[in-house]
Length: 383
Image (cartoon, rainbow, N blue to C red; front, side, top):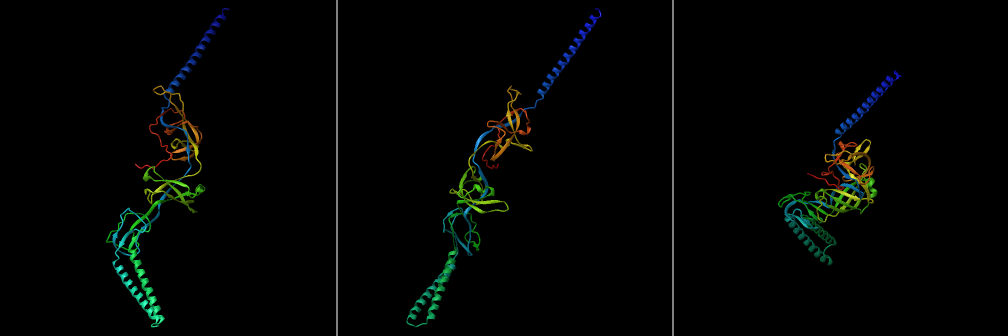
């Protein structure tokens, strides 16, 4: 009995020591986990400042777009067929002129004098012919003499017509109605045949020439409405219609040339301008859209960062949202916007700028004071 009591006492002491050791070990592990948690909390990723937008549905009218050039319906460099000294400039630069209106008169004094001489010779030949007709009636002259008189009369009249045409060419007229440009020709200046006097352009309506790929030919037809704009007049648009489609496709580029007439009654559009041409093609479609800056492309596909509720609080005690990367399927683009076919739903808040510093779980501070472009019809800007 006396031997069993010390054994039991030692067993109890040993069990107490083991219990204390296990308790100390568990306590140490709990303390270490607590300290690691605090350390990780103090070293959490700092929040990233980004912009964000909500994905929403928009109605899109499919359009074909091209860049073309404007061309006058009629346009020439007015010149002269004959050489001469400029006597009078009968127009002002930039003036609207009518068909047949006198533009320039050349010195024609000597030509008119020559015309008067030829007219006198033709009148004499007419008198001789009439006299010889009377003499031939009484058989006083031969028929050959009368025929020679008739031929001489025709020759004299032809010379009069030729000289009259030369005199007329010394007066230069507008071949069609339009607007003249700026001339550098002055009275007293000698000009040669082919020298440019002034440009004349008929600009109402005006032509727009542009090219489209052959695969879009099925969406085009003569009479189809178009809209033209140019950076000269900001967002001002001009209406027009397709006038002609070239029956031949360029074998080098596989593009086809289109000619359209554009309303230009205000004379604002000028030949030589470049123009953005838009053509409505197909039925209206509805797409979920985002700014194109929201999409990040990598070898695995296209992704966006969506805004999700988080757990970390900011200095004001508010819970900050976090970023989560998701794959999306982008569709057609229009201006600064892109259609999203798969990956997110309407109403999803998506990061639109600042994605380079994000990863899954990064806390976010959303600051939309400066937003990326989201215009369906952007225009070039020059500063």
